Amino acid sequence: GAGVSQSPSNKVTEKGKDVELRCDPISGHTALYWYRQSLGQGLEFLIYFQGNSAPDKSGLPSDRFSAERTGGSVSTLTIQRTQQEDSAVYLCASSSTGGKSPLHFGNGTRLTVT
Amino acid sequence: AQKITQTQPGMFVQEKEAVTLDCTYDTSDQSYGLFWYKQPSSGEMIFLIYQGSYDEQNATEGRYSLNFQKARKSANLVISASQLGDSAMYFCAMRERDRDDKIIFGKGTRLHILP
Image 1 (cartoon, one colour):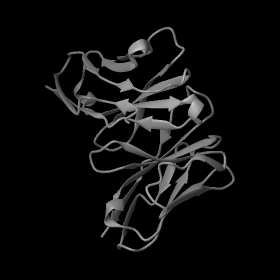
Image 2 (image 1 turned 45 degrees about the horizontal axis):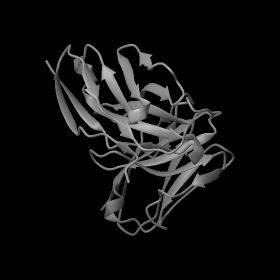
Image 3 (image 1 turned 30 degrees about the vertical axis):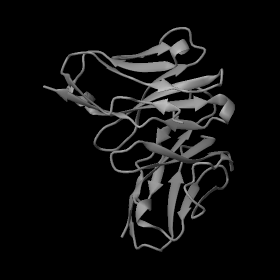
Image 4 (image 1 turned 180 degrees about the vertical axis):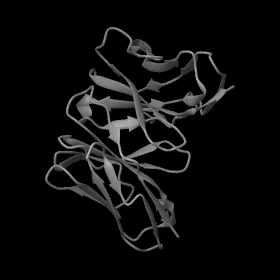
């Protein structure tokens, strides 16, 4: 596709359930980033991938959060045993290699934990 | 410690006036890049402008320009001749090349353009 695609666009889940959020980056983009944005707040860095490896996982809030990327393309962010404080918009972005390369963002997944 | 600081949580500006959105950053890297993004109420993230740490001239893109003061570690966004459509959240971000290209964002400034 032409842009970064995220699915689902909206997800409502019950507290304690696991959820999977998917990101399909722009073809050829080697870097992929996950951010979390709570209502009216800034973007909280979660994790990023260079190819299939994740040099920096420091932003993951707890061990309930994990992410993987396969084939240097699609990435999945998994949240286990969801809590109400996990409710937020999860944004994925990709970029090509190079310092000037900007991030191209998807439209996000709005997660609501009830 | 915050790496990107945007001190203005909200600003109100009259249409057609110029506006400056502040951004200061903290890094020990010599090579880094600074980005500004716009997020309208629709939620999409729109890339506006980029400044590299080694760029000698301030970046410009149409009505957007970046007032880059390296010694002060500041990268303020200037919007000339503001329009109603400029009302949005604006985020400053930094890519630290010595940190494996991790990109971090400030908390943002909400800009309101008044008719």
